[in-house]
Image (cartoon, rainbow, N blue to C red; front, side):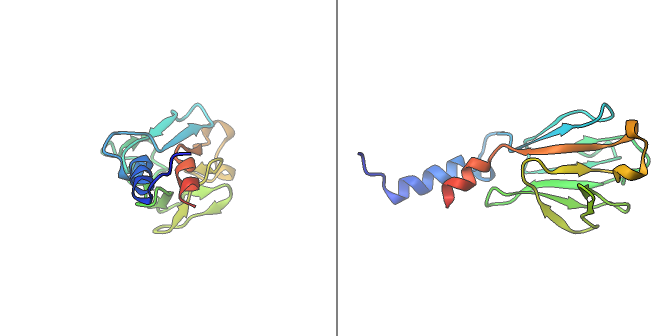
Length: 140
């Protein structure tokens, strides 16, 4: 066994954490569960989604807010979504609420419009997959 110094291990965790990465490493994936949306890879530390073309993920649908939600990675490498919309962003059936944040975990179903309020072929949503969950396990 080769002893590993605490400093080496700390530097390894710092480099392995996507929040500290200088390269554009993906930290999350959004898999669309309808043909209305495209799959998305989350690379930037903060990613906006909404109706306006200035968003990182632009979805031209009048039912969405100009800036509907924000996906972001905090300094600890945890993934979050913040609801910026008037009508709501939902995790499963639970409304996040404007200005509120939700810590994302793999398998979370994110609805941009409540699925019970739209036709089945108009459902807009994603399944979230964290690509950095192993990093958080190493820190424990």
